[in-house]
Length: 449
Ligand SMILES: Nc1nc2c(c(=O)[nH]1)N[C@H]1C(S)=C(S)[C@@H](COP(=O)(O)O)O[C@H]1N2
Ligand SMILES: [Mo]
Image (tube, rainbow, N blue to C red; front, side):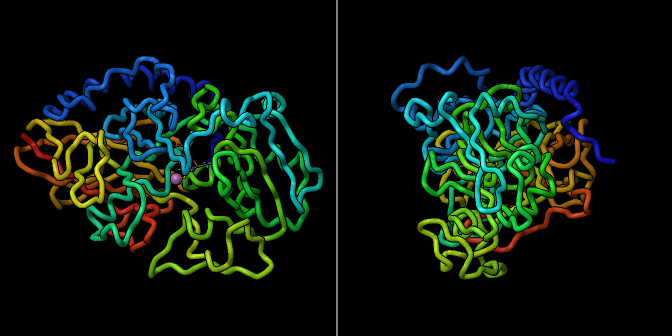
């Protein structure tokens, strides 16, 4: 039975309201559960005061660091060890930018009154341009969906995959480059109906060109057509207009696929009869490694400026695989870097007080939905965790819990998700040198005191 989320407006706002309440209450509970760790300033964060007016040093990103982890100059991770809510508040939602966040003050094309989306291309019958106000007058819907960066969990390659920083490159995402929001959007079905598509359509290119000159991701037209109500041109997140970091005024949302597909600060949708190659489907955001081979391509494909056939190194990442995490900071020992505001120092274990504990976590399986979550302690038998309602299936995550009689000493807890197609997280995944989509079973080491 397929239930469409867009029809559940009441449930959605209820979840959002409950989420807000839960946030305050369980932050305390989870901090308390983590005894010694709770004493560190990161876990003890009070709800943030309104962000102070942007000082020059803050201009790279708008988001206040106090509720997120600073991974690099333009990227911020969710503090997933503090996550308690079903919906991720925007302030706690990860930011992944290839360039600094462009803002309307500097890039005037992003001002609502100037912004335009151009829909055109060789396979379009009736090209059109639309401004922000008119876009908002088109039919819209909303969907609850996770968004996850391909690089989320990259640290697992180093910490437990046996790979080094020479073999796998990229930012040190731990488990927090994922969040769940309610996205409000004009569905591609409405865009396509308005522009008319010729039968030869092969590729849809979502293009920004505002933050950098290579931020466009081609997608097969068939993929978009197959879920044209779910993919769309998004203008609001959790009920509010998009913030600059998340693509204001308008971005694309492709539920279930890795975040790269969801082009922020979008200005153009181009539909063409050729295959299109950009940086983001050739040598960036693709699987490159001994078990992967480069996709087929032809001389008369379209190559965006700066890209040639020689750049096509591996298949692009599409659906994010089933994954899970405990809300426990992962030990960083072998990773090339430790974010400066990570709650643990290099090699340090999180501490938990001995006794009966409720362990918590999140599991997601965007393509088919989460069927089950299991855990095991110190290599013992796999046991079922309890999935906390709601489980809204496809595109969404679930929260899970299990009780643990924690005895003093050092322990390892593993978590494993199985989706509704019967696919379970593997022990290891093969090398891919950009560290994409590591969905291996994570191992959380904990010191019980
Ligand atoms: N224009 C543009 N769109 C972009 C990006 C970017 O750097 N520029 N980053 C992409 C990547 S890699 C991810 S994971 C998501 C992150 O979305 P968020 O920052 O709202 O969480 O945006 C995608 N869209
Ligand atoms: Mo990403």
